[in-house]
Length: 96
Image 1 (cartoon, rainbow, N blue to C red):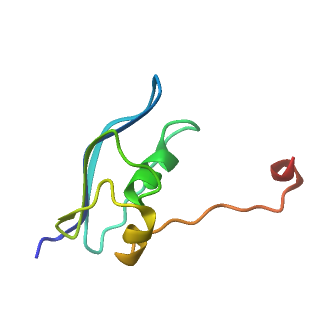
Image 2: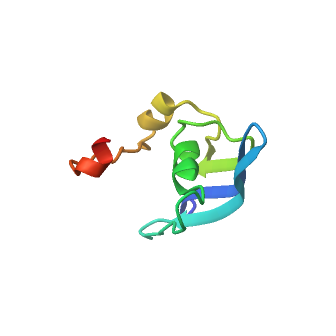
């Protein structure tokens, strides 16, 4: 078994003429913590949405525990133990 739990290779997604994520690659090894940092609009959430199956990538590959998973729908990714949560806040500015 590989030590890599997640491999993202050249992941990209386009929404019409907008390239939201462009050739992102990284590996996460077992017992490793990795942060994805960037300014607003950099594509962090979009990247997580592709990994969790909310969005299907335009190109690239996602490997989870040695199994290719890019393009699998969210319910299948959830059955593999991958999901995402949504932020909720009770701040009045977030409710406008």
